[in-house]
Image (tube, rainbow, N blue to C red):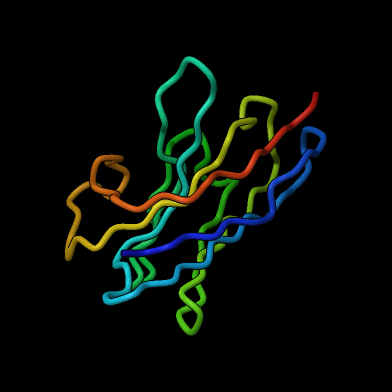
Length: 126
């Protein structure tokens, strides 16, 4: 079992920045991958960015590549998502996710993630 606690959402104007945090509490095994997915009403939850905790290898959705940066604090099993140059289309409910899989061929594959946070809202106004 892995519990995820998110923080850092909010409202910002287009071009601004926000930083999301996700702290994991694992009762037995630490997660191997953590990342962020987002959801808008009527749409499917889509991957934003994920990181493999073993080596900090990061994967990004094309829509955020170059604008978002995912990082980790290994001491606290916390993952951060730095979001720069935000656009109105980045507005969504952002969920932190974690997986215990040893290796994920496509780290952006949503079904690979078993544990989910409650979500934090990001709103970008034009």
